[in-house]
Amino acid sequence: MEFDLRPLEAILDLSHPRKLEAVQWAAANLNGTSAPGTLDRAAWSAAAEAGFLGLMMPSAYGGSADTATAAMLTFEGLGLGAKDQGTVFALASQVIAMQRALSAFGSTEQLDRWLRPLIRGEIIGAFTMTEPGAGSDTASITTRAVPAADGSHRITGQKAWATLGPVADIAIVFASTAPEAGTWGLTAFLVETDQPGVEVFPATAKAGLAGCPVGSLRLSEVIVGPEHVLGRVGAGSAVFARAVEAERAFLYASQLGATECLIDRAIERARSRRAAGTNIGSHQAVSHRIVDMKLRHESSRLLLY
Image (tube, rainbow, N blue to C red; front, side, top):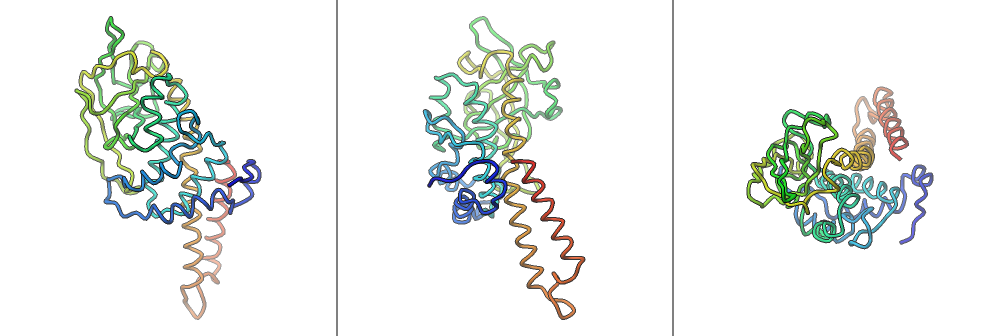
């Protein structure tokens, strides 16, 4: 279908058709039946078939080449319609962080080898910057990649809290190739998780997003060739920044939808629950709280769009 995808119309229309399409799909496919810490593979494949893994990806490699507004509306709708917020978060993380970095910096050979099957849902990717002692402070990264004369690198280190790490087939691993240069000495590598020296840990138990497995990867003397360097040696900070600048907005678009769902549930409860001879929504202490929720939701939506 053809929709009006100008940003202003998207901001003003809480029931935008593009958003409602995603709501209906999520309600039918993301019902949260998978066990905590596991990925719903059937839902993942269905999402790929529906084109969600191709959002904003180049059409030459199977993506939809949609606008940013269209992608935002889609993820917002998925968050509104899904019971399984974990899978929605996982989809957003792969598309916005992992695939965005790959599509922006990958060579033609790398895109053919990895981006195509990622978009088709045949393999799963992870974006691994965080370490046990370093988060977004990229200068504190301790994972090292030692170069060899033939252009290969030997990577050693550990990554923590990697979204989709426990189930990933390919990971973007950030390692220091020039420790003395700090954040300017980082390089991004494409590392297949089944190669020698890669240890994948089980999913870490957490309080929410049960359908999104998160865990650690340990790399012990993992050898990768020059064809596994993403971008160029020393460009890791640029790769990280390109992914994070989009992640700051798009990763939270689904949370807008989830928030809207919770507000709808609160309103339904306020209308149906009765106390002192009337529904509890008639009491200002309840109705004012709902108004505050709605105000915060619309303010957040305006900020993100």
